[in-house]
Image 1: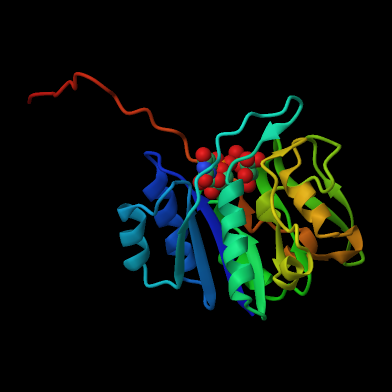
Image 2 (image 1 turned 90 degrees about the horizontal axis):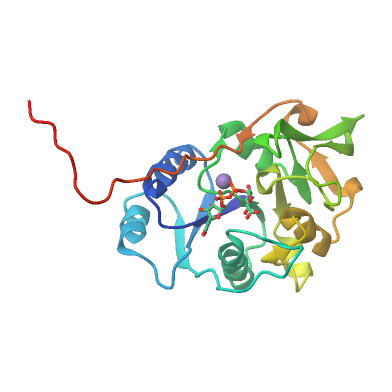
Length: 236
Ligand code: UGA
Ligand code: MN
């Protein structure tokens, strides 16, 4: 199968650093389509040139995050309209033999992750490091089946896990009309999506050596404040 990788991205000082790091990883992965969705009204020249110079099969799209008021008790999620735009593009193109993975631009990905993703039948799951206030969140396995999940934050999540922890067969997107992400959830962006796809624990295919290894890290690039106003130059 071909792996369709959907990456939301937005303008900030560290954007090109994050995207370049991700591109360098993806250059080492065969048979992929990288769907980059900018959080903007229009595609920027910067990302257009980045995509052109990349030697990768890139689909470049843009979808701006809507300014909506957050209902109380709900949390607002990032990258939602962008991932949905990517899903919409896939639903239009209808690739048949494909696995879909949502790869945020600032995480760190091992090449082994993509080898695992390639073998997904319905939904593959694996641990994600440095997330949810823990060293890792992970599926708990027994006899090569997922039986529970190791996590700490928000017990009410349908599946207590991060975006980076699963990949799905594209057919699931075609099967369910509402296979989209919701901007506002009760802190359960991922779970609410998987619920809409009617995913059950028995569907989970454990990867990363029966979920005993880390192949993806939920790293976050530190926001850099650039000095405004007078710039002090040191004269030597
Ligand atoms: C966590 C999860 O890892 C994300 O998958 C999830 O979208 C997010 O929480 C959430 O619940 O909103 P976190 O590291 O806090 O992630 O989120 P970011 O990495 O800042 O954003 C997720 C993706 O959306 C990134 O690819 C980022 O470039 C993009 N994004 C972020 C936008 O497109 N627009 C924004 O205004 C902010
Ligand atoms: Mn992130």
